[in-house]
Amino acid sequence: MRILLLTTVDSSPARFALCERLIASIAAQRSPMFEVRHHVLIQNVHNAELGRELAKTHPWLVFHRLQERVSLSRARNILLERTNRSGDLGRADIVGFPDDDAWYPAPFLLELSRLFGAPVQPDIFVCRYSSVPEVAEGVCTRAKKPSLLQYVRCASSNTMFIRGDVIRKLGPFDEALGVGTPVPGAEDLDYALRARLIGQRVYSLASAVVGHRDKSVALRAKYYSADLLVLMRHATNDTAHIALLGRKLMVGLYLIGIGRLSIAAWFHALRKALESRNKPWPTVGGLS
Image (cartoon, rainbow, N blue to C red; front, side):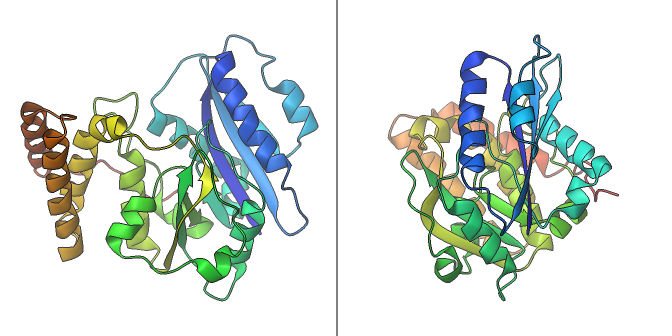
């Protein structure tokens, strides 16, 4: 089983140190049962030697460098483009997009490879994350088919793992979304919803078996407008997507009630989301 992981990181010492934790967690789980290729795009690079010693120590680790800083969605697309050209994407059975500050507690990668090699043959697997993640043993027997709401609650760049042939059909992230764009967020939500339209065999685990800082209500409010916009776009798919949109509108009212979102911000988010319905989807297609 071949696992391809794609990560982007800033070159600052603090951010790169977090990425080293992710790399160390992968290195600690190396096994004959699966093969890992981890491509890392370092942005804002001023030191050409950054990461070279790590790459020598870990031959499965590939660094790419940019002198400038680009949006998160663009950075992930650069990695998709480069791994597609190198052949690593074409050989991948499983693809994941861990953030630089995520990590995998053992034996997560082994359990992930077992799940995708099991008779259920999932196209997509999602789980939860936590700053104190659980041991991932038994993922194969514990993973269940989720509702759309359960799927969206779990799906994030850190916790969605997609079969390689689905990724190759799905293509790039929407570069109009994500940190570093006018719509700072929801690029992973959009990607997860699009992936689910292609990969019908979806499994999830409600347990937090991936390491990452905990979710905060403040971030929920920060990304509310982006999430609402994406859910509005997808509401034409079926009634389940419409129900999900309605729930998001109620979440906005809850955030207003606890003082995390202003009424003006909620109406602004709704207006932007409604406007987005009249605009054509950005061109996103398969990776040839």
